[in-house]
Amino acid sequence: MPRPEKQLTPDASPRDWFGYELRTWRKKRGPLTHSELGVRVQVSGSLIEKIEKGTATCSEDLAERLDEVLETGGVLTRAWGMVFGQTEKPRPETESASRGRAEASVPVHAGRILGRGSTTPPSGSPASVDRRAFLATSGLAAIAPIDLVHLVTPTAPREIPTLIRPREIGQLKSLADVIHRQDNEYGGGGAVRELARSAIMWGASLLPVPCPEPLRPELLASVARLGIVVGASQFDAYAHDDARVSFRLAAECAEEAGEWHLRAKTYSFMARQEIWVGDPDTGLTHAEKGLVRSDRLTATERAMLHTARARAFGKMRDVANTLRAVGEADAAFEQSDPAQDPPWMAYYDHAQHHGDTAHALFDLAVHADQDPGQAARRFEIAVKGHGNAFARSRAISETKLASLVMAKGDDPQYAIVLGHQALDDVGKLTSCRAADDLRELARFAGRYRKLSAAGDLRERIAATVQA
Image (cartoon, rainbow, N blue to C red):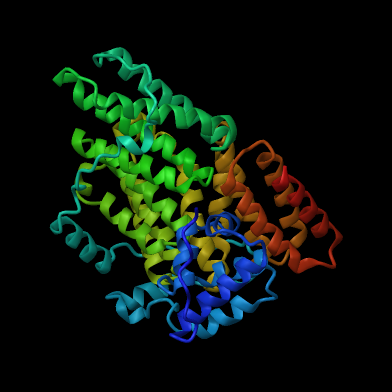
């Protein structure tokens, strides 16, 4: 039987009152479970539960999504301003040691959204350096060992070898490559999800098997790589708890194998997942953990992690630190040398870097009233650069670009064209993330109710998402 929900006390504090209102509407519209509502608004069920209990902060954009899904008529968005509005503002510029430089890096260009102009965000964040020093001295560079195998392996016996040989390691690597390709081309749902689930269970089953000492590091590294690609696929399918277990398994295997490159990649994905589900502070911590001993990482890997920091700061609407992190990511990527990168880092190319940094700038443009031109230009580069092998990344960048033009530009017809281009790609995917980005585009298109083409776009989005 499900455990009874905690009784709420709406008069205890403004947060408790907000949580009580959220629970009231959740039960009125279903009732929906925490997990069911979380899936619909792109966050974890545990975050919904914490907001209801008054132990977690609700962001403004999450309040807006809750209002839309629960059909409250804007109750939660209005309540958000009274409860969280004064505490959710970006940190003052005076917290930065480089206030003047930060202000200079936020130009506002006149004219169309895709007008020319550039910014060069300053690099170097004193706050980030302090955090990294803390992480390095607090023992967070090593994860406390726990037994995760039982979380990803069933109780029923399965066929496993009696001794690890190069053949098993080769199979692990091949599985990781296949899942990586399928996930990027089709998304993490459907058959890809089933393949990923079986693969990680088999990989975890190999860890207790006797293994010749010379092969042990390679076995651990292979399971770590598999955990990363499986976790990424589960993340895309919104199997968030499963993804966290896969990422944690990958992190522990990478730690034990001394694989700093795989460790960095794991923490990058852990950061992106937490940012996506509405916890940018935890995402930032993961990104900072990945940067511990950054001297052991390649320039491309450092760019990847600084981009994750930028996306976290963007969700916090912290303009100065977002621009600094984008600047640090750009500076690192300029030093990128594919010959020094592990083969599985080949995905982080010119298109990927510009698409990822554009996401951070998108949040500033839409939610912090910053110039949208930089984000738009970076999304354009990503769309042009992603081939069919990365159809999901291309589709997501197309959708976000359409949303940006729809929300901040002066040409909704152009945004509609971009939206249909995105739908051509998204229709081939089984990606929850891509579907939620489409829902966001539909909300922006709803501002142009007198425009019949905008209505047609919304109808096609609804049909695509439902399918």
